[in-house]
Image 1: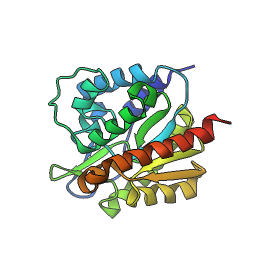
Image 2: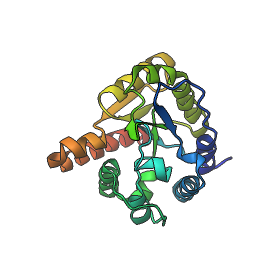
Image 3: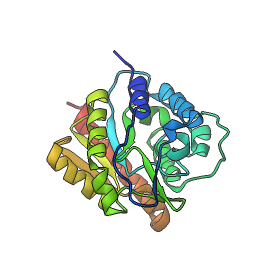
Image 4: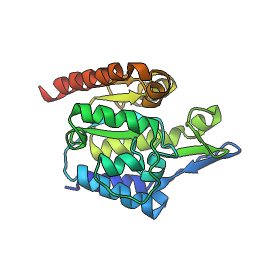
Length: 231
């Protein structure tokens, strides 16, 4: 049986977008670059070298300062080296979402314990830029529409190859959750999708309530684990 790490890397290195892009929009695929791919391989080999399925957490899509350079969702070069113990020569610029996620992961019990049960992915596993700035897949209606078949295929591929539980989390309680929910209503991927506030939203607008949001994350994770692992 193939290891999860091997299946994840195979998925990431075989992403083949064929949809049309709106004017000025460019795809950001970190797995086309040797350095980012090498770091992703080290990360997944360290935390996913087993055959156990995980609970999925869906972000939006890669960003320029996080997985857009490290190849690891919600992990900037700084967190990859300090928190995950994977040295790298990338500029150690902190990224807001990564900062929140690793605060939460450490409160949970650390990366090894967390990644043993959870798998971060994204509704769209490839990122986008426009005029040199991050662009969410849903920021332009035509992009979201054109990418839908690709997105749906990616979700189905991950579920079929990695295995998934009936419930997942969606990071982003607004448009990302709405889009994923509508897709799920049609395709029936999951019985339940639990929305959580997106880390960037928390760090930009709710930083004073940071501890409360971490507690909410941990409460929802604990509730999920009780449902799944107590059966």
